Length: 234
Image 1 (tube, rainbow, N blue to C red):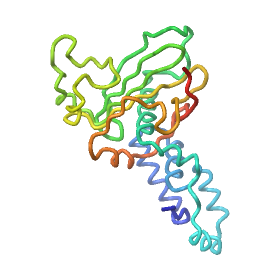
Image 2 (spheres, helix red, strand yellow; image 1 turned 180 degrees about the vertical axis):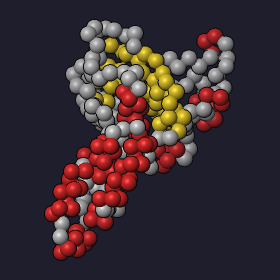
Image 3 (cartoon, rainbow, N blue to C red; image 1 turned 30 degrees about the vertical axis):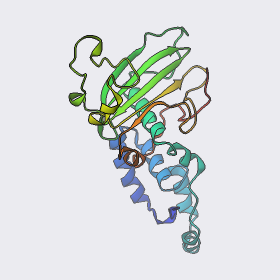
């Protein structure tokens, strides 16, 4: 159902932005844009312009014919797993664990690691690995409980080492310790974007029963200096 954008006041959007800023650990300006997009506008400036241009008569007309949500806003939330990956990349950038600049050497593959963090308020693991030519492999394990991982404390190669895109356990056991897993590729040399569109080029997807609807309700992410979608390079 389309939203009636005229029902949103400046105060309501700013209160929502304050909540988003706290949840995502982003700037106030970025949070204002996200709140405006959720209300059906292209950004916060577009929302302010609509308030300035809207008189009593126009409000009544808008109430009968609600403004259509911008296409680019829809595309950012069309795939919940891509939205999760954007949140993961944003988290790595905020923690200064990765950079968007391509390394000088195209064959450098020694940049990798993982971090225990919170994504959308839930414990998660975000992993990154340089696969050469400016590309980073990004994986997010959402709602991850390491204490319930069946191979968390095993010995040798059977112990979880976070070197794979998905957890080191039989997939039928995932439901006991992780809600969602997703992997994508961040291009940094020929552009700055997560490769593919919607579900295209996303791999390692696992979604525990009931988690898809929960993931779809999460706040739309604004990429910090990169695009959520883009061309795939071999």
